[in-house]
Image (tube, rainbow, N blue to C red; front, side, top):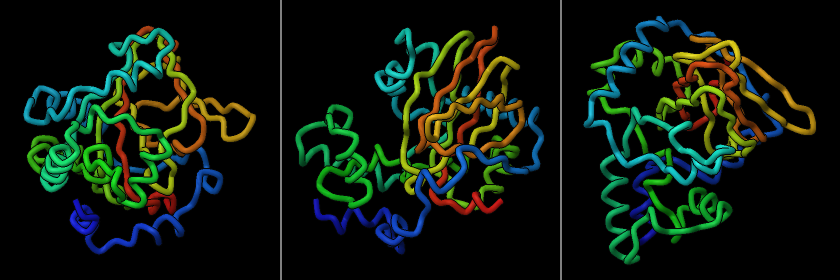
Length: 251
């Protein structure tokens, strides 16, 4: 497949310029509080109802990825429930790529470095369905969850993947690094939590801990080493909003 066809996913964008102009992981705080206005009770109730709406399902959870983040390796103790799905064009392009390569995108094993390079350069290794920039929340979901729409409208950057991440009681997530903030940022809103659930960040050699309260809105720099631990007796459910851009840093 020609690169020009894949670039149809990024019409009007200069990816090289975005990479140059956006701040790196050492140039932004490891978490930023955002002052958004919404009803947390309505948001939680509507999001939980969306999980009963099966047409939102896309692919099964990437079990191996999440198993690797857990000390015990039990994916049932940390899993994501999707509120978004890939754009139709991304699905079509991925299907054609899989046919040309003779292998499904889920079965391709690329290094993290190659995967990141493919998403910046949109080269021969690129897989549209791994790139969260190709995801969106369907309008039907926003019609069913007006409080979620209200929340997402307060994002200055473009919203891509949206999901709920549950970390069960007494469970740790291992220290890890996600995508560079030049590529994506994460906004966390606890829908349900307890006073013993903490997020941790280690931008250099110093560990910072923070309990994110229910209804609080915090932008996380996932480019630095970070992790979480639920020391409490109840699950911790975070709404995670992925954004393509850094406009929300100017809160």
